[in-house]
Amino acid sequence: MEIIVLKDAEKVASLGAKLVSELLRVRPAAVLGLATGSTQLALYRQLVERYEKNKISFSQASSFNLDEYLGIAADNPQSYRAYMDREFFDRINIDKDNTHLPCCEDGENPVLVGPRYEQMISDAGGIDLQLMGIGVNGHIGFNEPSSSLSSRTRVKTLTQQTYRDNSRLFSKTEFQPKLAITMGIATIMDARKILLLATGENKAEAVSKMVEGPVSAMCPASILQMHELVTVLLDEAAAGLLENREYYDWTYLQNESLKKRFRLIHD
Ligand code: F6R
Image 1 (cartoon, rainbow, N blue to C red):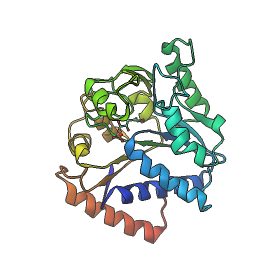
Image 2 (spheres, rainbow, N blue to C red; image 1 turned 90 degrees about the vertical axis):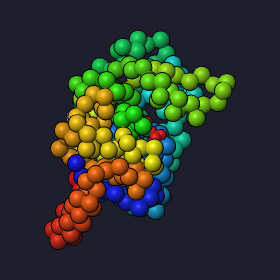
Image 3 (cartoon, rainbow, N blue to C red; image 1 turned 90 degrees about the horizontal axis):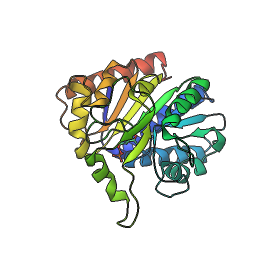
Image 4 (cartoon, protein in one colour; image 1 turned 45 degrees about the vertical axis):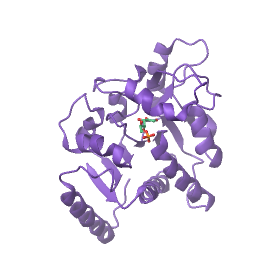
């Protein structure tokens, strides 16, 4: 894992956007794995800014989101489809037909969505770069603690903690789903590269377990230790409990000077 600690959340978003831009420059038809949540908002804002300044184009790109709630329609403002349209897709030049979420169509058996989504990802040639956040309990996508490390896209029940964490985004009168369809952990691990962003003190414990704890289904993000190409971008607060912090900073400096000398790029 490459662990990069930056001063604040804005710097995390800005390096994240730079890495996505580098990928699109070398691979304009990249397949992006996308996430929702508060952490990603700053990243999407920076990507939109880059697009508006003609520094980046999504015209040939396609995308697959990690997850979608089950039980609310795509046109409900609380759906992840609505979030993605509002915060990102409607502001860039991506072809909406090439943007995908694991949605359950009206009347469809939710159990069938997972295999269909897996097939679509495979038909697209697999995911080049998977963007993601991490839950306070170590979840990735909606793969909650105790999820199978070999899981594929499927229906999952949110933990009470995730349900509570997300309740801040729902008004008292709104229906808040307890079920979601999420890429599985094995689906995520198939991505060629992973870029995980975490900011804020409330993520520090989950980050420390992900990076320095044992690989365990009780911290689903810890499986990323087994992936060949993972970059973790953290602000100071989210990195607060890392024991090996000095080494990560030292490694980052060495890598930066290597890149300058050999013009290596992240692709
Ligand atoms: C959302 C997702 C979740 C979030 C995680 C962190 O698509 O997959 O795993 O990334 O819950 O959410 P925030 O950024 O809101 O703390």
